[in-house]
Figure 1 (cartoon, rainbow, N blue to C red):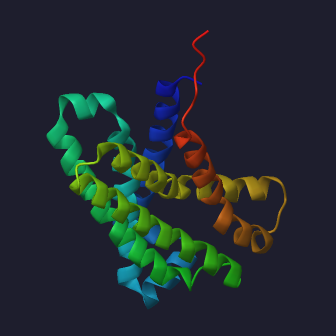
Figure 2 (cartoon, rainbow, N blue to C red):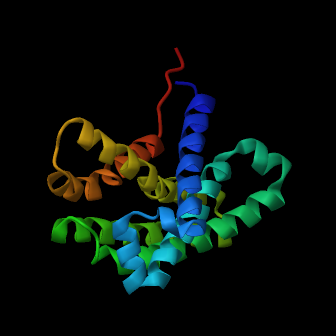
Length: 199
């Protein structure tokens, strides 16, 4: 698939999930029961995770747009700053919510490591751009967005598990890992230097 097509698919899926998060934030009555339950216990964590995740997944794809970087560098920078703040807010609140996730200890650990990795890769990306190392910054941003994209994969795997008749209680602990580990593997594969033949 051409790079433009891959970016378009990624962006559309990301914006769909961002729109869903915006709906949950602005229309509380449509929140699923488990979210309403968490809101009653830790409202700041829930709303921080929804808001941080919403901005991160919405802005993330555009940080990889060469056209935006070349024509509107200030927009790229401000979106990048907003993205990184959103990741920190979403990651810290996600870490707080991980211990309350459905699926037991396996799911708790999967989501906790996702949150920690999300914050860590964002910090590395920020450190490198502050040092003026654009190449390293971009590499860490690719890793970071692969974790941000877990929000999309989670919402793909859950209906797929239903379609294959896998009970939610069995599927969700695995999904807590599957929504991000393969993403990281793909990102690392994409970052491997390719040797082109001169013949």
